Structure formats: C-alpha cells, structure tokens
Image (tube, rainbow, N blue to C red; front, side, top):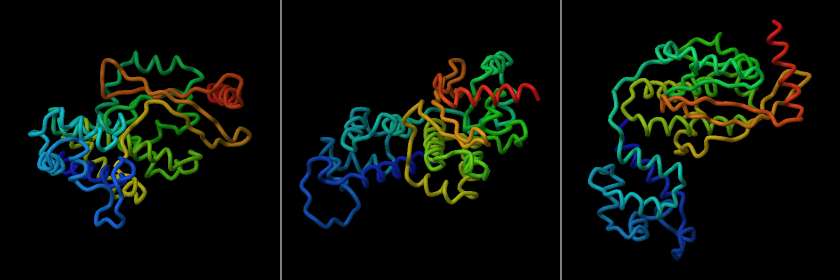
Length: 282
C-alpha cells in the first residue's frame, strides 16, 4: 500500500465529513467543497496552511508529532482514527511479503490449540495477520462454519464475510459485520503497509465484492475490541446472541483470539450447550 496515497485519502475523507457548525465556524451557505476547506482545518489546528497541505499530500515525514496531534484534534478523530493516522504518518518498517495463510496456520503452537479446545462451550478462534483464521475450537465450527472444510486460501475474515454467501444468512446484521471486517482490514493495512500478502487479499476482496468496495471507500477503521453479534441458527434455536472479546496474544502482536460468550441463563446459553453436546456426540 502506498502510505502517501492512503494518508491523503483518509484526511480528505475525514475533512469532508465535517461541517462548519460541527467545529464552531460560521456557515455561509453554498460551499464548493464537501466539508471543511484545508485552510479551515489548518486554522483549527493552529498550523500553517502549508503544513497541512504537505500532510494531506502524504508528506508526513516532514510533519512533527505535535502537528499530527493538532490535526487529529481539528478533524475530531476518534481514538481508532488517531491510531490509524499515526500508523500512516509513521509507517513501521517491515518485510515486503509476510507469510501466507497456510504458513501461518502451520505455525500455530499446540498449546494455543489446547487453550481453544479447553473452552468446550465457548466458541473461539485465532485470527492472524491479514485476517487469516489460523485455529478454532469445536464450538466455533458448530456455530459459525466448519473452518476445516474451507480451503486455506479462503479461510480469512474478509473472504468468509464478503465472498462466502453463507455469511449473509448467518449474521442477522450482516452490514454491521461487514463494516467491522473492513475496519479491521483497513487498520491492518495501516500497521503493515508493505505486506504484499495483505495487499493481495484487499485486491481479491475488491475484485469479488461490490459491497467490500463500497465499505472500503468509506475509510472505516477499527474502534473496538469487543461488541455483540446475533447469529441465525437452524431450528429449534434460530437465534444466538453473543458478546465477543478480542484477546491479544502477547507473544505475537499480529494474532488475536476472538471469544464469544452467552449471558448466563439466556436462551443462547441453553441452545449453545445443546449444540455443543450434539456436536461432541457425533
């Protein structure tokens, strides 16, 4: 990924969503640009217009951290957006090509798989760089999909959501899930702009999904590591409502375990127990 282009596109999109009234500026009616002008952002950030234009052109190496923070304040960036801005402005050095999904899956430690398997009634799976699903437990295969039957190249968060038609039936709010997946992938590109495997994954999704292209253009970035999700399940259960947490693997910053739990005493808890018992008996 060209970080200069990505930085430019991100700043323009964040500037375009603001209106003068949002930041306490007078609104004089018809404007030739969508959102705020560059000179208005520069004024709000108390930096020169030249400084801001340089940043919006992707020339971040010549812009100080103080200016980045001031621009983030002026653009009303969220915590996740601030992290993304910083990752684009100060891209970390890294290899041009990371391991593909198959190589990453082969490197999953047996102890990690045992941890997943120990959660006998809690769906959980391990996601690696670029959204590759590297390992999972039986409950996850029961309520989401039989990951073992999915070809390794297709076993990624992006492809399971945007390319596999089953996802639209599985997720009650598919749009929210899709936006979450795009936010995660955009944040990944900010952390690893030179990762050729990740760039190929983004290109594949863009080639195969109009919805991905639409959501990708909106510049969503990851804001949370916990939320809720509702799944459609086969009768008699029909709906499963989970809270999920993304647990960072301390030994590898690229890997997270997604853990899905049901509130005690709920129909989902009872349904999950029945599904897991039936799956274990097979």
